[in-house]
Amino acid sequence: MNTTAPIQKSTATSILSKENIHLVIAFVLLFLWFHTAIDKFADLWTFEVNLGRQPLPKWSIKPLTYVVPGVELLTGILLFLPKTRRYGFWASAILLFVFTLYVGFGLTKVLGHLPCSCSKIIGSLSWHAHFWLNAFLLSLSIFGLYYYCPNLKIKSSTNHPYTTDQPIVDRKLK
Image (cartoon, rainbow, N blue to C red; front, side):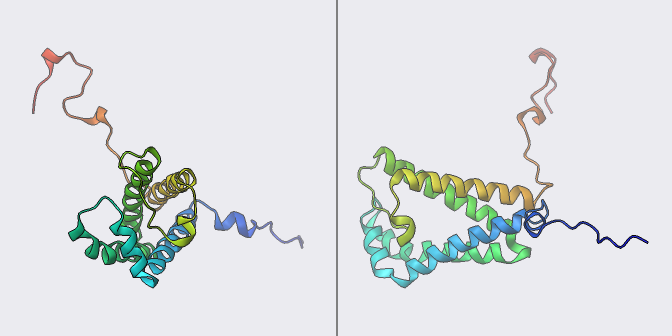
């Protein structure tokens, strides 16, 4: 009779399995979005003043004061709920793309001096550190989407109906 217990995987290995990796990514991003939204809502006046220093039309400042943290909070909620997690990853990727683009403008000074309206923790980073943090978080959003939706197919240009190995003269247009 064999009395040895079966070998079990360590907890860290089972948490980071391919099936669970999207959960880890979702909760990292969920923390980011909840933290930044709550930080902005907690001090709306400062956030509005910082938005006023941006190269934005004056009429957009007041609505953006509520819309930006609202969208960040909604993104966190979408990531929390399993049925909406896919949309949460998409929203996170889009937001991080836009914010990374903005930080890139700040780095290159294309729009002049840009203030940072992020949360207090992220706002204390240099533009370079902020750029790389955003790029990392954007990558996490994309990987989360990939792991959560493994059947997500991105059509390549080779699947295009007008892209074939045939000479141009022999192609038949549909």
